Amino acid sequence: MSARRIFGCTLLAALSGCSSPAQICNGATGIQLGVTLTEGYVPYTVAGERGRSFLQVEGNCQFAYRSASSLSREMVGVLYPELERDMSERLSFGRWPGLAGRYTSGISDGPVLLLDSGATPGIDISCDDCAGRDSPIRDIAEEYPHVLADLGPIALEARGAVRYRVWGPVEDPGFPVVDLVDAGVAVNVTALAQPTEPGPDQVRVTTQQWEADGFRALRLAAIERGAPLIAGRDAEGHIFRVDFRTILPSEGRAPYLGGQ
Image: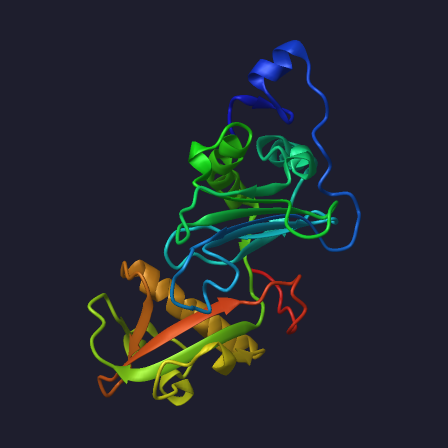
């Protein structure tokens, strides 16, 4: 958490007194604060179904997020009161309904930041080129990645069911490939593979704990090798591409398997 903040107030505001930030953990059902950073016009991926990055907080203080870095994991946890106040202030949460609107620069294929509060139906704020906007839009966009970073120490990797697609064999992708035998990955990539890259309507779901954990272990192995995407080589030397994400507790489309 930023050293400039004292119990949810900036240092400058604390010197002159500050009001309480808008409450996020209000006891209501469902997501009360949602932030999504989209990629703009990019090819479909399962990993990017919820955006390049996202943050969501439910009324019971349970949160989930994914940072924008390559092969980021889906993380979950529970906010404590000081961090809730800090998040609300840094993201100007209480001002979202009053700022509602679409802020566009005409850059049709650039990243878009979406802000959605449970207090109003639909998206409150949509903006591209947020860094070039006036405050507080610019400030929200600048604070967002730092807010995610501050959640890291209290977050655990989500261990829900997995949405995935696997295809191959493919040509050498030109980035580090995980040796499936040496890595000891439990998921049978070869058996799951479809011959060509599956479209969105061909994405599969596994609710098997061992298999879902196997996908996450494969992602970790790819991260450790510095790969930007996931590819695995089987015992016969065939290479397969893997694209997946963990289903979040709030989605309710498959059983949630716990946390680690």
